[in-house]
Length: 512
Image: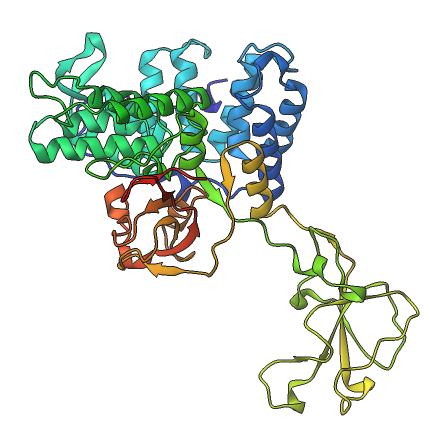
């Protein structure tokens, strides 16, 4: 039993450690299988907080998480473990030992968050012999591996101005701050709440502005804690003794943060509001007019997506038609080719090419069209589109029958739309892209992306990496989000959805 991952021998937690090296979890977790991700998203949609917990289809949710976990989807493993110990009626499995087993499996895959969850199990007494000492050892290991939740927990504990082990905190800002910043850089918004308190300690105007901005960014990342901390600042908390971050009362902004905070608490971190500046920019920017409906605030601030493009093959006709969501073998994997003067030996899709030696090109050229065509056994291949090319000179590459493709990004986006975490917008009239060093040429929502070969691509190119920018403003600098990415490395694409003119000159109103 002592060889099980739950009993891994780890260095004891050291609240006075001298240093911390930031590691990003997304760079060290196993790759997620597309089909497993589709099942995971389907389970999340059924497990939505919009559905009363007694009315959720827990047998189906459990089955989907289980199928994804069997394909090593680490998030599904951890959600499955949480479901098992939830105590919700209808969950097929209630044995805590099974939950621990799934967490251990994720630990064996090297998942930092799994070590964090195991620490919680030790702290809660689910592990025989577990206690606070063993729990903190797991939390420390998880943080060092890249778990943002573990970094945030320990960052809170070590952010004191002095030691008080009895109350569970220590004074080690030299480690607490980089831990919290590393978590925040990974999109873990709750870390911003404590960072704000730390940043504000000098009590200078610069420190207060920095603290206010990190709370605002935390709200964008889905943190109810940040929203619930920034709303009182606009109500005037601490104004009389000089600790208020704003310096004056702004009830309109306080009301919007409060309503948004309630929504974020309801969704427990699943809802992201990257386009918050569309409805609630920081001062001195004027507030756009709002209709008073809380859902307008949420919908306008959430991430957006353009309508999905129809699969090209499904738009074709005749032999080139291919069912939506299906594909064939790539040309490089074609098992054999056949000259066009022979009958079709096998039903499936074939692609007509001719030799580059006939044209001096570097690679084979299309003899008919660029899309594969489906033929039945015994049929005759159709003639080339070039009269000078004889059937014997055409090489038909066999690409097999159409088969379902692994779920792609469009499936993920449809799930997010169905869950209400995304809003679909009409495509802009023309495609507009900018380098991150340019000034914004058009007001609206922009999506940022870096090259796929950038080491931080998995971390930066998330579905919610969007922002609402006014014309003439600068695009967000990734370094402002604590990421070591140069602004010129980011390409911003315009998605539209600006606000409309209001009744009074110079004012705007929130529009979806």
